[in-house]
Every structure is written in C-alpha cells, then in structure tokens.
Length: 444
Image 1 (spheres, rainbow, N blue to C red):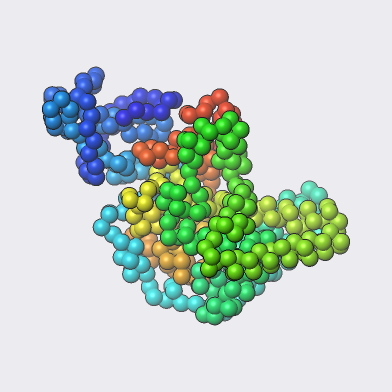
Image 2 (image 1 turned 90 degrees about the vertical axis):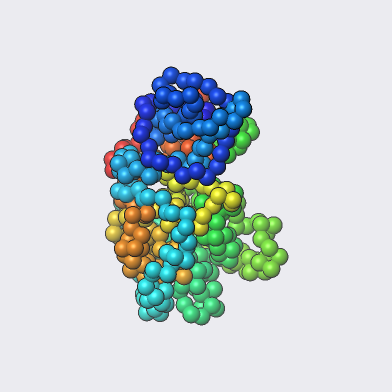
C-alpha cells in the first residue's frame, strides 16, 4: 500500500486475525523482512504517524498473487493499542468496533421506555434556565469593566447556546406533545441566533439519517484531496478553515446551508420562507433597537460577541461529537447505521456549568441512537447504553490534546487512514497547522 509522504517506516506490529471484506490482486514481489514462504503481501497500518507492517497470506493465481486486504484498519481490535490511541488522542476510552450484525434497533431496544417520555415541567424548566442565564449574562456585560467582558461574553454566549438546544429538542419532537408549540418555541429560540429554524431542521434530520456518511452528512465532511488541489487560494482557505478557525466554521455552515432556497425540496420551501422571514425580522427590528439604545459598540458587546461564543460551541460540539482519527467517514455502500451512531459518536464531558447551560447536549451518544430522547433524559439513556454497550463507546473529557488532535490531524479524507493531515499533502502552505502542532498545549 502506498503511503503518503511524511510517514515514517516502523517496526512490525503483531495484529490480531483480520476480517476479509474484499480482495485485491497484487503483483508478486519480495521484500526485506517478509515472513518465510513463497508469497506474501504487506499491509501498512498507520498509527501515530508511523507505518507498521502486517504480513498477510496470499494465493498464487497465474502471474499474480491474490491477497485479502481489510478495507478498515483492524487496529481497534487490539485492547492495548486502543488504550495507547486514547492516550495519544486525548480520549479516556476508545471503543471496540461494533459487530456488523448489530442493528440500531438492537441498541434502541435496550433503552428504558421512560427515557423517551416528554415531561412538560422539565421542558419548560430548561426554557427558564436559558432565559434566566441569558438575562444574567446581559446584566454582567452591562456592568462589567472592560477586562471582565471576556468572562461575561463566555457566560452569555454559552447561555444562548442553551436556546439552540431547546430549539434542537423542538425540531426532534422531544420538547412537547403539541407540534405547533414546538414550531413556535423552536422558531423563537433560534431568532436571537439569527438561525432559520426550519432550514436547519430539514438539514439536521439528514445529519441523523446519514451520520458520518461521505457526501450525505450535512453536519461536517472531511476535505477531499481534489479540493485542496483545485487552486492555491482555496487550498489556503481550507487549511485555515479546518485548522485555526475551525472552532468558528459553523458560521460558514450556517451561511451556506440555510439561506439558499435551491437547497430545499419544493414542499419544504414555504416553511423555509417563514423561518427566513422571522430571522430577517429580528435583524430588521432587534439590531436597530440595540444600536439605538447602546450604539454600534453596544451591538458588538451585547449581541455579536455572545453570538461568536455560541458559534464556538456549535462548532466545537459538532466536531468533537463525530471527529477523531479513528472514526471513519464511509461511503453509502459501506455505511452501517449502528456503527455510525454508536461507534461514530463521542461522549465528551465538559465543565459542569457548560453542561447545565447547554442542557446536556454533550451527552450525545443516546441522542444519535434516538433523537426522540428529550435532553433532560439523555443522562439516564447514556447510563443504560454504558451498561449494555459500554465497551463500544468513545469517551473523552474536553481537553487541549483532544482539540489539538482534531485541528492538526483530521483533515483530508483517505479510505485506508481515514484522515491525512494537511502538512503531509501541502507542507509549504500548512504553516497554520504546523503552528498549532507546535504551540497548542498538549494537556489531557
């Protein structure tokens, strides 16, 4: 297997027996270090930027040797390697690969029925928490001296992220038994974020249906090599976008996916137009009122900076939930729903105040098993998943090493390696990635 430049050769790694999903014909050749025998084929497994050689049996067919090579790296089958990968990537646990025979329904059937129950008191309590914490944040901004404003913005932006999570529950029909109430609450919750509710709902449903599926997933996609080869300007923009400014890339996602009527089916367009009208009404009325009361500086202090903090959390939650060197994007013919939702979703713990203000959106694995679970039941659902499927889950505590791994490694799609870093493919233009790799803290 040809390796990308910049990956060093390493020792022989003893791997467990391999599944055989596909076959390839390779020319017969000899190589130094091959096991005894007439024929062999060498498979390179890349881990920690080193290439480990794994020799597989082969059969002679005329002038060619037939060899079976696994499509996905088998490295997750080894417990010690998973532990080392978890340490290197900033995880507390990297789960085993879920067997192909397990279906999403199998996992869902193990969840207690009560986790699907809607509780109106708990739902409206979450609204009260968000409204109160947001109002408190605005008070902090108004009263804080300039040197405390970053703390006030961090609180207020995190509080307004709770508005998004409430709208998120409404979109998944897990907020109220009344669909009209959900539509109204969801639209109102999204308005201060100038996020059109219905366009987001339509696209987000597709994210759940196609999680980590190449091309189809509407949340995030790895970069294709042809994209970074298309033009120097686009290459530099992509490197910055998936590197230093990735924690704010949800702004680009917001602009690209939610305002273009051509991206929606004809039956969706009327509801999309209503949402767009609500967002533009907030901008036409809310923004002038803020400026009238406090000037342009007030608009910057009271709306723009909390909005930027909100997008930091939008981007961070999304990429941490589904992005890691060992989590693959797969084509539709290889994609497995249960593996994508259970193996391909990360449970990440954050400081408690963040989890409270954001209504446990970080407890994300059960949400992908079933989006109908209300946010206030996610922890109970995850306890059940841990009890029944614990060895398959990926877990982390939010830390510098985890973020550094995502920002410096998870870039360009590769079927065998899952991701290739930019600085291996475009080293001369990857100074932003090299800077992050050198100066970002590595604490886990």
